[in-house]
Length: 382
Image 1 (tube, rainbow, N blue to C red):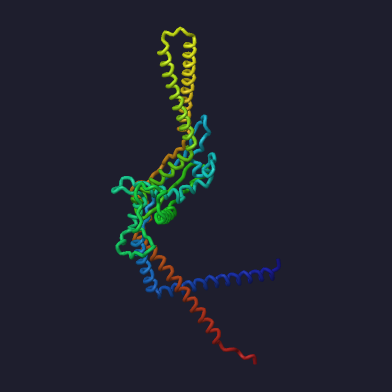
Image 2: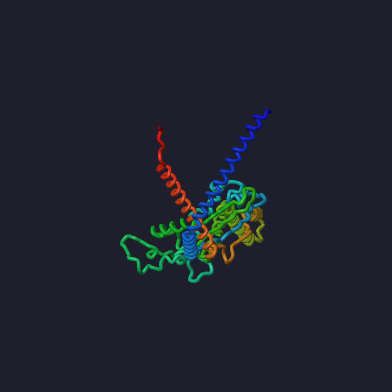
């Protein structure tokens, strides 16, 4: 490489270093300029931070606290085979695998615990350990204070409110009026949105169910009743056919038992009436009745045996829900601390004020530079 080329490269490298140094210095000067400007406006920044901090305290005070009841399930299905068709495991209810039976299969069953139908069934159940006795529908209205201002509400003809509708305990669902159905559906839809069901892992049979509400006692009681209602509904639905078969076998066994008792009584009466009879036909008739007794007795014994086998199979195959974790007082809540809210909102307020001030300063400096460039004297071409 010639000396001229080396000299040329050294000159270029020095020019690049000068440009780099110039750009770093320029950036540093700009940063210092903006910092100096913000320092002059520190009073505005402090006022914005304090204002937002006060808003944070107000938010923490007025925020509606939501109390969350959380269940974690270990889902197990029935085991063992029997003379009846096997029932699918309870885990299939949540789409975790297992056999499929119509609508109760796959991921669709995860949504079962979010359906309005299950919420409505729970709302019509009696609230445990509560005086006076009432269902969850009336309890929800009581907790929300929906009837507090009934005396102040102006009644309009043809328009109904909760003040005009009641939900008596143990009232049959079929006897509900149109107004009762409307309010029940509206409240059920609102509660269904507060329910959350999560499959933690498709490979595991663990499901997390949570329900949030503004009242701690209602959140706990409703979650307990809801889990029990869904479990009962699912088990009854899945085992309905097996229980129907058992009931059918029991009715048949009762009929055979009645015929067996009649045969015993008939043989006894016939034998008593012909104690000293020497005719052969008497012995034949007694033998026929004895044969009927043996047939009915054998059939009844087999029927009882089959019933017990069916009951044992049903017990083995009935789905099981094992609660790993259940909610206890005090429940988890989303309450916001006043100090934490003050710090967070104050920081956000200060940051936003700095951002806005920097934007204003940038616009001003840009406009000033444009004005200066426009005011520069134009050199004559002569």
